[in-house]
Length: 516
Image 1 (tube, rainbow, N blue to C red):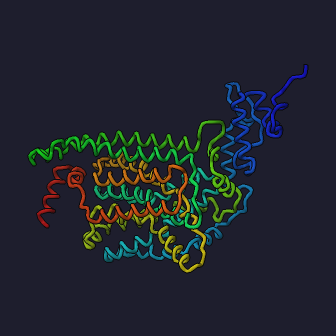
Image 2 (image 1 turned 120 degrees about the horizontal axis):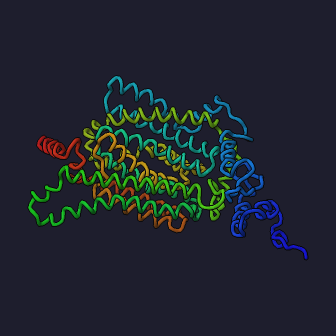
């Protein structure tokens, strides 16, 4: 009797033949179907990007490996070949430098970098130094964006997006670390919330408004969007828990005498919140790491850094473009450029922080508005300038193409990374350098952050968006900016963040109040 093989009944014999070694030797039927489906999805992409043509064999441990020592080894080889640009047009360092210089008109603002440094060392007016530093950070932010886009061509969309998100957060992270070392803890907390609000509302809102102006709706990747809802929620709820705890400590304060209400503002209470915050920080970091593993290496065989099965066609086309397009920068030049840019940006941001106090006092700006709105805007200044030019050209009927950086929802990923990684990192760093930073934030800040989280989750719930929803998100940000202008902050929280102790913080606050 003739044997009946799976290949006889397979409606796709070509695919079955390519995996005959695997199916005959090792994998169950379900794994075979999953692998065949993945092969079908990736068949139109270059081989060195996603998969190898080598047949799989079964090791003595029962794990499918290739003849060279394992799928993980082959995956590393593929990633290394892609990173060094194998099979692509080579770009010299001179050409890379020229492409970088002419990548955007914003690069003309690079001339302000030496002016900012000279002004700092020669003790020019703090207001002038602040303005020069502000303008200097704009081209540096663009270089991070441009470098991240170029690295995506060498690393793939998934890993490239992670690099781009981290680079885009470099400005805010540097400002936050500088504020922490100078013990500007209340301003630091406001800046953290402001950065998250900016990337939750203003940046994606502008992207949806600009990118969706000429089409009915835009699609978002459903796989990360669904997870982002959960990550955003847990990040905001992590700030809500200490705030609720503090409110419960002050139970009956409205009916109690003033001395009783003030008794909870002491070093003992702060120590409790410090311990609580450090534990929450470790948990948040674990959540963030787990989410990156799930997104970039989901369950299944050889799924790392591949488009998800339910990814929209636009995602697959974008991945194909990244795999086949000729980059404008050499990969090693790009890495060196980003390292140098980080160093320049760190120094420039430090000069900006040094001039903050003068600008805040002379301008009569509330600390809350300064941290919640003004400082985070530094990171949006480059994209904001691009958006303004786009609207001007559109008004003149020049029919410009929407800027690519404004046609994405990557900014929401920036908020998630800042909430789940940089915020707990700052708490643990403050523990190491002995600064009393806690996750007990101002109630007003927690409330507006919670509202922004809910709105973003509603807007992206169906993985689709349009220009009206973008306009709504920008409108909420403007509402928050308007109300924050009149908000003076919660005095109890500022006192608990006093350096080096609550007692000295109360004394400093009393002295400041007496001076007024």
